[in-house]
Length: 102
Image (cartoon, rainbow, N blue to C red; front, side, top):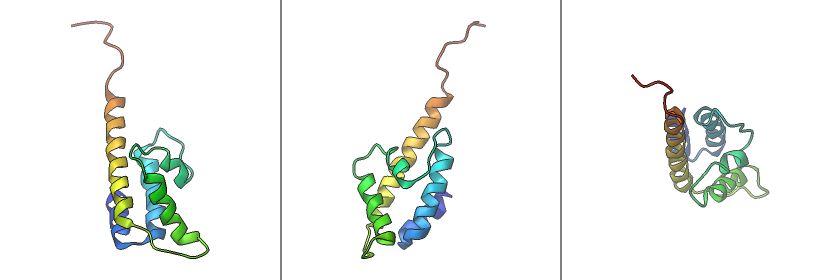
């Protein structure tokens, strides 16, 4: 899904990018409840993701469809992917030491 998301973003396909972003985020952050692009924006650690996402959404639904910066959004998506990987790695690290030592 991530590869298709990046391809849609590079192609400037806002509709496909939005659909795939939601799909990928639900997989990448399976422990979170994500219903909208604003839910996804709250996951971002890099400033500016919400604005890049809003620009893409506005290009689809705004009164005057406009241009959105696909490369900028892709940079934010890549940073979000790194966050997802870190969270998965942290989730597999035991919090408590084992009760019994060998």
